[in-house]
Image 1 (cartoon, rainbow, N blue to C red):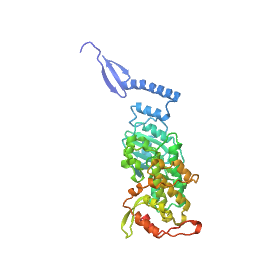
Image 2: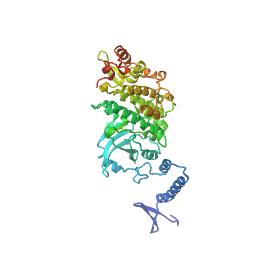
Image 3: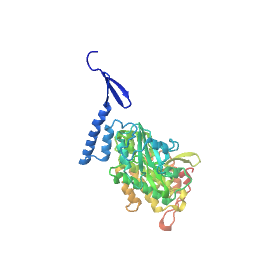
Image 4: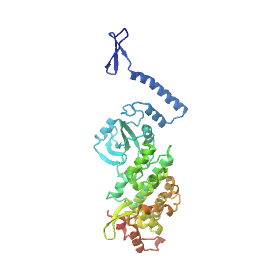
Length: 426
């Protein structure tokens, strides 16, 4: 083969032996040289960025993640305090044996950490369209602390699987309490839930360092704990998707009854006012105690479809607010609060996002620190289109015919003769 040096390589563990005419020498593999060069460069870049104040924590983590060849594999070496090992999650959930929920973003499991005996909810995200900077976004989410937001305790990234670990809310979600529970939330509890939810959204929109849009506000994402703690869940998951992915994902897999009209319009801007619309829909369900779209009994006992927002608009025009309250509450309802909340919900539903109040103003209205606006009927006509074919027309005629009044406290009192038609079977 000529007189040149001949080299042969033999893999031995994580080293290689270089053979040259019988003399063996230990040499560093190419990968080790790569690390020796890369690590100091990254350290210099990060230190310089921190010193100059040009990059925030989330940007630094994103840059490291993008540069690190291991960012798409199991992170067994923590890059921040919020990373939890897959083994810990597997043990806490007893190998994912206790599923407690599922939704568009993934499946949720209940678990208990052995090291502090704390209960947690582990969400396994099942989408493959996550942004490259998801580690940075999740880290930023973990830094958010608010009394009305579910705390993100940590996360794990294992290949294409992402696990988010949240504090556990032992009373479950609002949709179960409103629609699937024998327990009836009283009026004051409903007002507190409406207020707590509004405060959480207001913080996301205006109180945190960076505005966060929830984009999936619905009763299933409003969680309750002891002493009626009200907390919003899934509040940062939309940031893990790109703008186009987010809109497509939410349009295809979101709950359409809560999506603002602008979701269905090409090139329409999705803003914090889209969350306001969803909140308005949730508020109507809190008031009524039933889903906005439901099957009810018709005049002859046959099943009919009811679209409650359309009925709410019709009753608002007639000034008949008590007919819209959950009939199971009987005389618990505060009339002034009911009227205020109905008007507020309709203001949140305006088709024109600019006419919707901010969540900060929603909080002030519920607290009585700001007057509620007047719903603009022209910007609510789309509810008639959404509810076309529902039973409101016959019901409002029946309700109008059976309305009575009283001079006591100058407040109108209305018959509940059509309450079964309005509410549907329980």
